[in-house]
Length: 329
Image 1 (cartoon, helix red, strand yellow):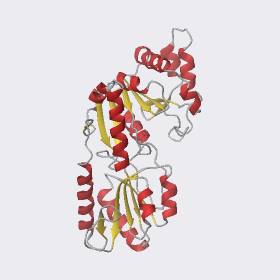
Image 2 (cartoon, rainbow, N blue to C red):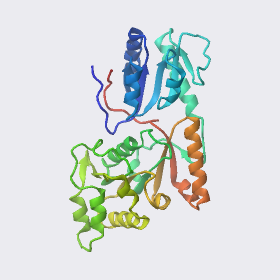
Image 3 (cartoon, rainbow, N blue to C red):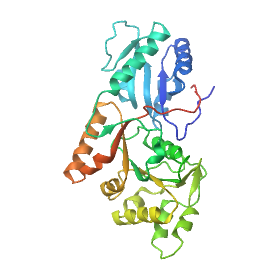
Image 4 (tube, rainbow, N blue to C red):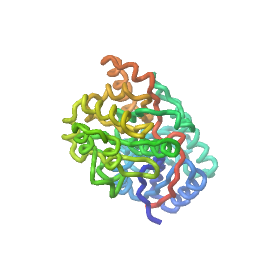
């Protein structure tokens, strides 16, 4: 069974172990018991796992102790758990361990306990709360931004937009310097965010209609293809971004506009301030927590502390239902 490429879906749980028969059995049990929570992938070759993680992010990585310390430390994952033949339960390289030769119930119980424990760490001033079911009550500009990279921010933003679009008209705009092109919206429209910015510079009476001709659709959610050139993104001024967003909210039918924000955006803090809500994703990692703390301090120093008042901190992938099937490598 081949691994399927996931688009707009998060909650990846990777099992990587050299003991093929054991790993396949554990993978089968985990996917049966936790398949409604995570999308599972199995690797026997650590090189293939590293290649996969170059373009994806694992919320949980369960891997054998046989791998080198450097491999375990550098793997891009929110929570790493090491499978070991040692039953003492001691941490390995600073990561929690699980004794591999015990019942499936005990292994799953230990995984859940570790994830619950780690979820309680790293609280900051930014609120941390589950995504409410009545998400249609959140309207206006909705920012999705994190100073921590490669943690599934774009997948979260798309999923949020698609859920909201079941209830209200939603537009998704990717404002990252390196968005991945058409990776998330393969075969999208031939007009992109750059064309939209050009459009607003023209004096016309049909902005709403013109903008609607530039959008593609993913489910019930509309989207604008992202800009192709990172330098072009950086050359857009703060005032141009503000004018564009004001025009969309005034002239278009959208009740919510999801802004997938990156560091290349001029006037980033001003845009975050205009948002009715900002989702900031994080992971339980010392480096990530340091970046999050620095970002929060920068907001306060720059006079944008009120951004934190309408910010919700989201642990990457927590409490989100997964819909795709399991795959194996």
